[in-house]
Amino acid sequence: VKQEYVVQNQQGGSGGTITAGYDFKANKEI
Image 1 (cartoon, rainbow, N blue to C red):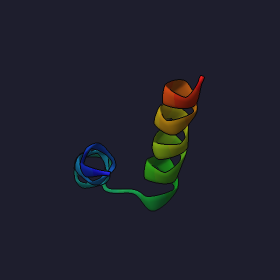
Image 2: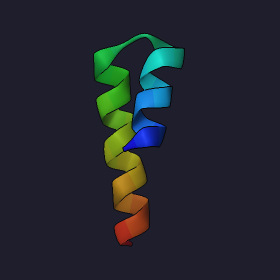
Image 3: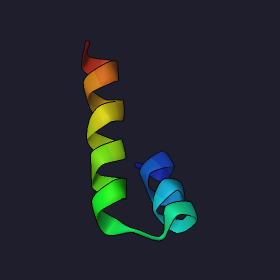
């Protein structure tokens, strides 16, 4: 969750952040 927040601040976008968060979670699950 902390990583997702950092990405949000750096990118400054909601859509991009959500996609990145899902990708990270999918990678961890796989």
